[in-house]
Amino acid sequence: MQEFLEFTLGGIATGMIYAAIALSLVLIWRGTRILNYSQGGMAMFTTYVAWLVIQHTGSYWAGFAVALAAGLVLGSVLEFAVVRPTENKAPLNAVIVTIGLLILLEGLAGIIYGGQYRSFPAAFSIKGLKAGSVGLGISPNDVFTAAAVLGAAVILALVFRYTSVGLRLRATAFAPAVARLLGVRIGRVLTLGWALAGLFGALAGVLVTSSTFLYPNSMDSIFVLGFTAAVIGGLDSPVGAVVGGIVLGVVLSYAGGYLGSNLVLVYGLAALVLVLMIRPTGLFSSGVTRRV
Amino acid sequence: MPDAAALTIEDLVAGYGQVTVLQEVTLAARPGTITAVLGANGAGKTTLLRTISGLVKPRAGRILVDGIDLARRRPEDITRAGVAHVPEGQGVVTELTIEENLRLGGLIRSGGAARSAALADAYQRFPLLAERKRRLAGTLSGGERQILVIARALMAAPRVLLLDEPSLGLAPRMVTQVMDLVRRLRDDAGLTVLLVEQNARSALAIADHGLVLNLGKVVAAADAATLSADVALRRHYLGF
Image 1: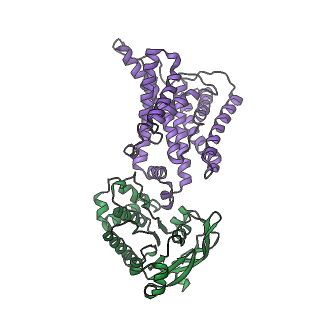
Image 2: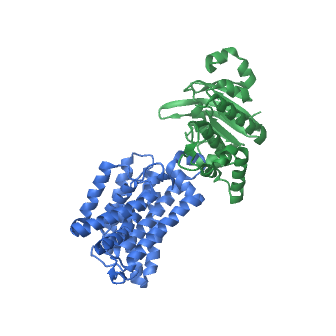
Image 3: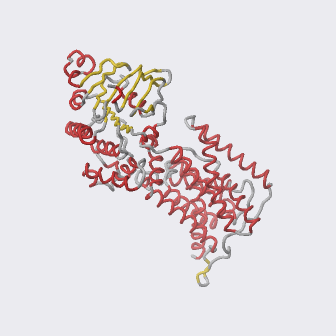
């Protein structure tokens, strides 16, 4: 029973990381129907920026803030300079461009920072929390991780729902042609979508890297799992992305805990294949959940 | 009197790829009038509206709105210059609520006060929409959606309204309602309307002027009454 509790809470904490990556993919997919394969690379790159800032200033929070800002900037610059020119071309062009971006970002990180594994600090203690004498399987840092992603997701949902910027984002996602005719400057909205995606990617990178290591490929497997979470959620539903992330995190935590932790990535890929076979549109892609 | 026109089109040439659809189309619409754009399927009526609103890039010619040439500008900028295009086939965003659809139309107004006032106006003019503002637009019937897209276009306070087949697929009672609405927009709000219709009879009934297109060329342009009285023209191009 205690194991079960530990695996569940630990799974939710890890799942929030997948949720953040999934959200970043959904933000771009909704607006542009582009699957951003460079999302993991972007997250890795902004985490290096955070690492550099922490090295120089000694402040974790300075690094944290700069990484988020770098995510915003990187997302908008990439959309404007690299992705925009593929607009109105064959969809495969955009796919190849984002894969190319991934290779470019990982190569650049290798050139600038070297290929060695670096440890990245955590915001809070990573010692396990206890309720009385019962271990919960999560640390204060895990709680922070989950709260940070959840908080960012809630802010995003409020912005989507109650602001005119959010209305522009949603209208552009659902009906770009209509939005244009109503005077919405689609180009700016798409840039904003990429900027927000960069922000969520940066958040995921900074949060997850404290429990892995930082190296040019460090986000590859996280990206695959985040993508799986997004597919579970239906790729165009932000709520689905968060739920998909949590579901995947918990399932993988049980699988790792009860079946052995060496094969977690394999289980993740198996989950992806399973979802694509049984329900390729995801669990949340019905009209009802597209409301949010 | 081309000088007094709200919308002037001069020698407009446009098309898709290798195909030229509009061949030197010219028209002048005075402020506060309805111009019916008539003709068979494939005559270029929809392409004319799409070119005016920037969805199709013109190859030649000028599109003057209040004297400013908007040809070759982007659709969003043309909308911001006061031209509202209501495309055919129900352009409501079904995933958004009725109120969100309306607000979307008013986003180009500057300032929250102007937007709120426009929304209040819309609800006063269309009580039907006010009753259901929190519902998803996808729950509305075809006729109600047509009302919503027109109401949404009005949120931007346009001077020129381009309406593409507003009666398409509607029950006869709704056709009358929509046509009444278009007429009131001219009479009460002083809008300049370009009305594309298959249903030539009901369009000419409310229009001041008419323009008949055939294979992308203007074959007739006159008062609505004159066009209605021209039996040969009606038989040949308008089917009534």
